[in-house]
Length: 175
Image 1 (cartoon, rainbow, N blue to C red):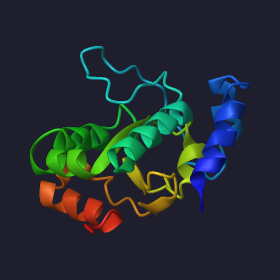
Image 2: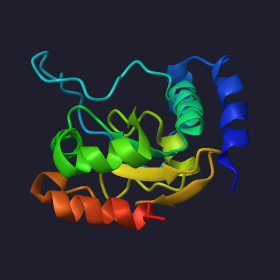
Image 3: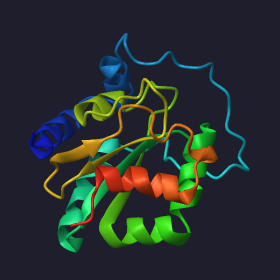
Image 4: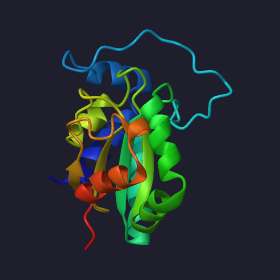
């Protein structure tokens, strides 16, 4: 499936609709139920930009990937999610950081309380039903290579670097 054309058409639609209206319109009954809103303490590092236009950021990531001859790793998560924070920490240092930096352009997409950007996740074939973080690997032309659908990274805080690397390698094997 060529995702880039769909993304571009949605990107033009996003210029017309307010972001909040898009996320509300895209929410489906099958999406996980949103948890009660709780404020993330200001002392907590904001890993996922809650005000970002995910489709515009995806277009930038694809352009960067094209220029660098890499693929794109899209990580769907939220700032309140301990496993999302743990995965980010693991991918920011050591062998995981080296793996990601060498081969992938990283894009973090906020899903809020499962009420934001769920349409984008679904479009990439990423199921959020088994938890976040959830990821997709895209070719630099926007085609989806692979995605998590079984909660493979939803317990990231209890996974070692080797286990996370195994999941990523399964989605993006070395050539």
